[in-house]
Amino acid sequence: MSLNIVVLVKQVPDTSEVRMDPVRGTLIREGVPSIVNPFDVFAIEAGLALRDAYGGKVTLLSMGPSQAGAALREGISMGADDAVLISDRAFAGSDTLATSYALATAVKKIGQNAGAGVDLILAGRQAIDGDTAQVGPGVAEQLGMPSITCVSKIESLSQNGTGPNLRLRRMLEDGYQVVEVGLPAVLSVVKDINKPRLPSLRGMMKSKTYNLPTWTAADIAADTTLCGLSGSATRVKRIFSPEKRARGETLEGGAAEQAKTLVQRLRDSGFSI
Image (cartoon, rainbow, N blue to C red; front, side, top):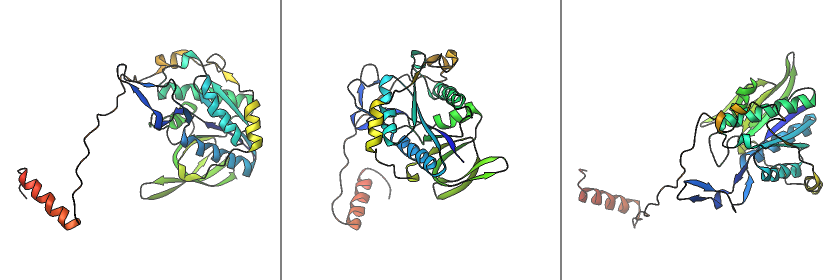
C-alpha cells in the first residue's frame, strides 16, 4: 500500500526578529530572516514516516514569492521526494480563504500529474505569523475531503473494503480522542506527533541541485477572481504592537506575608475586605 502525500509548507518571519512599521502598521519583512513554519516541520516528518513505513511519495507544496523556495529546499534536505512552489502576483494579498483555494487547486494538479490523485494532505496545526489554523481545514473544504485537526499520533494505516483507513489520535485539553478516517483526507498535526529528523548529507546535496518547479496561477488553472485580494473575504487594515506596560512590583516575604501586604494595600485603595 503506497501513499501519494502532499505536505503544505509555509515560510514565515523568524518571530524573534519581527519588526513593525509604525506609520503603515505592517510587518517589515525586508532584512528579516525567514524560517520554515515550525509546525510544518512536524507535518513533513509525519509524511516521511508514513512513506518510509508504507511506501509512496512525499511532495511539498508552498505558496509565496521566490524566496519561499528556501523552505521547500529545507524539506527536500530532510528527505522529501519533490516540491512545488506556486508563485504569482495574482496570489498577493491572499487571506486564508484565497490561500486555501490556490493550494487546493495546486493539489489537484499534483494528483493529476501522478495519475492517481492525492491520498493524504498534511499541514502544521497553524502558522506562527497568522495563528489562524484555518488553511488546513480550508484546503479540505475546497477539495471536499474530511479534515482532522490537532492530530498528535498516527496509530495505524489499514485497508478495508472502501480503501485506505487511518486510525489517529487528536489532542484535547483533557486527554485525546481516537478517530478513524478514510483516505483521501487532510490532517493538521501538532508538535507532539513526532521528533523531526535532521537533514541527511544526501538530502542536503539533493536540495542544492534540485530543480524546483514554480507554477503560476495559469499553470494550475486557478480562477484569478478567487485568488489574492479579489478572492479574499477579509482585509488586514492595520497591525500594531501593544503598548508596553510598566512592570509590576514583586511583594517581599513568604506567601502569608505577601497576602497580608496585598490585603492592606487593597484596603488603602478603598476596597472593602
